[in-house]
Image (tube, rainbow, N blue to C red; front, side, top):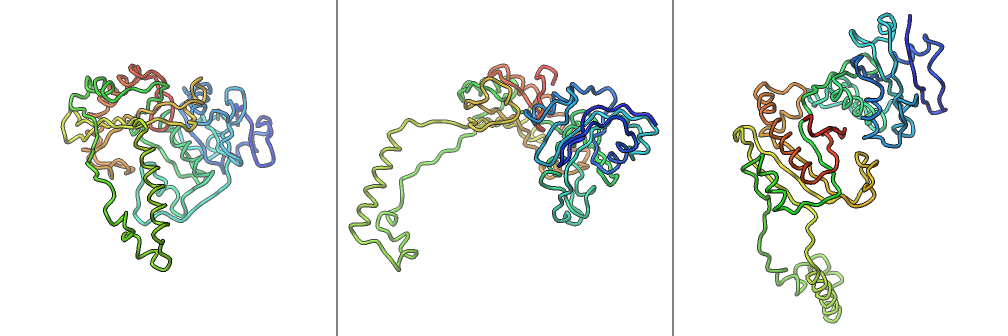
Length: 355
């Protein structure tokens, strides 16, 4: 057998080079979860995608394994000959593989006749993977979806995700766009777009809140005396006045519009929020350590259950393809107005001008 291989195998006790003993490598590949990719996918492309999900994990193109967690990593690429692929239980026609090293961690079996978009219920009928194994497998499936590959799980089952399933996008930007400004931007591609704001008048707490009747049943065994109740109200009033004196800060809003292809295709949502937490997708940006703005462009399809099925119906698939160009156009418009970076719904970076 012949096989070209690079990278390192990472285990709990360290790593060792994968060259030299082909039989040992083949044995390992037979018992690991594998990402199977077209031979045209280069290691640099794979490294770039992993870097958006695991910024500090390592660099495959430098010969390292990418560390996902304390006990898990991805190593490769392993370029197999046809004979080696058969020996490693890699199905035809795949010969380029990456291996996931992770401990076996399973939870309860899926419910009978349950379905899921990535086919985990079918591939793991005795117990769904979770923790490090589950996170690693979901990452492999996301990579397979992006790169039009497949995942061969350790027991031989094949998961081949639909590469067209990922339709939503997210724009990360250091800049906040006011609702009216973004509405004008989105409306160019989505004429029915409106601000999704719902307000109602509030007259304050009911009388029972001030007299104590509203909580009397809960504190009847130890009620507040008159002076204690007056002190409590005084502190509450002071706090209310302090809050009301502050300027109102808007840190999130939404824009919603019916698809121009027709109401049968659902709506498009643009969800906007300020994020103060670190996000892997922006870790390499100079503004990543400051609060930034997340613009999520999502399809609100009429039948969400179909979206989560492994094999959705033909009407759903037709609807998805009609809405896709609109989602892409809205994403480009948001990006051009806010700048930043764009990711797909699996968290991988995309060029908005190639959508």
